[in-house]
Amino acid sequence: MYKGFKITPPFFEIGPKAYIYGDEVLELAKAAEKASTKYDVGIIFTPQYTDIRLIAEATEHILIFAQHMDPLQPGRGLGSVLPEAVQKAGAVGVMLNHDEKPMQVSELRRTIQRADHVGLASIVCADSISDATAIANFAPNIIVAEPSELIGTGETSSEEYVKAAYTAIKGVNPDIRILQGAGISSGEDVYNVIKSGAEATGASSGIVKADDPCAMIDEMICAVRTAWDEVHDRP
Image 1 (cartoon, rainbow, N blue to C red):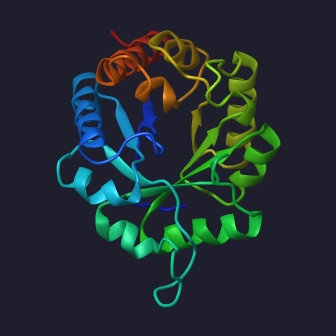
Image 2 (image 1 turned 60 degrees about the horizontal axis):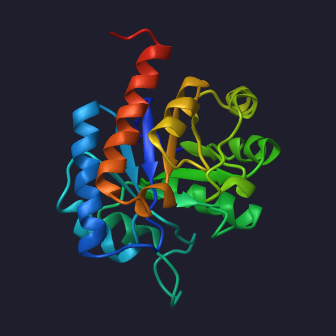
């Protein structure tokens, strides 16, 4: 686990995937920046590699993560994503093992170790509670407990799943932060997941496919803050 990375719940991850890039993703990042400061919610933003520097130079408060990287060292590796290059571009972390970019267990472990060495936080996806428990032994900074069958469906994890994943992961390593993802498409979805006890959640298509993506970011981040404050009795 990269000890230099700190994030306080509640937080939210925005994943543009390959839907948007360039000026369009920059506009979304600026909306995320505005919502982060407005509601005092940490936001992880995972753009295309080619947009990391663009967004890093235009924002101050959001946390930029690469969508993937490889565990190689500087040298040969044409077409691979070098950890040092990701960091130099302005990323503070990396997402690994997403359902759309799965990794072998041995490769995943080595990549988390490379992230730690370079000084990048790691957010690692797990599509079942058993996988999340196993990944917790590799000590990433954040685990996304995201059932792959729910991704992009508009159907969210049940309260039972949220609580079971939390208990399982924290039982291995209480320092790991947990993001409950998949199927988030509205502020109501966000509210329900956080009210269920999640430390964080996130969205991709629910934002970028919305009629007004920037307005949807505001709606979702507002819901994070509202639900969190209700759960934790904050005025």
